[in-house]
Length: 179
Image (cartoon, rainbow, N blue to C red; front, side, top):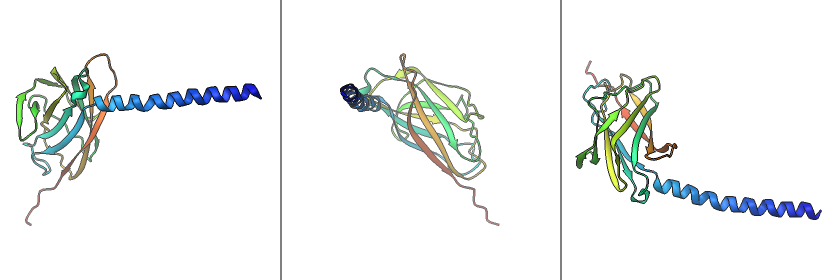
């Protein structure tokens, strides 16, 4: 009986230490992860070719040792897969309305089957910056409705974990006709 009590105490103490350790680890990760601030489109009508989708995110100053190297945007909802134009997509410091310095990016060829576009910055984005990525679709979808995009980041360094930083929502409407 004494052995069972001793074993139970050991397990409880060990479990308690583990439970105390986990929240500290999670708070460290969430403090370092960039955040999606907004997503918007210049045109929300279906089939428009001149649209740009803007994804604005911030790299918190607390993540001083983790600059941002890559962002992945994956379409997770919508009737039609949206492809992006690699040559005409851009990124810059600031927001859509307050543009700063242009950032060099490489946009991996949009994988329409996977519904994913990967944006790699030529130079890692330093902590404390707000940046905006402007993805140029080949055209807006033909079908109206809500389209959702999961936004993930990959910091520089030896870390291999992507952080899901938010879900962006864009809504497209059919063009009204007077018949």
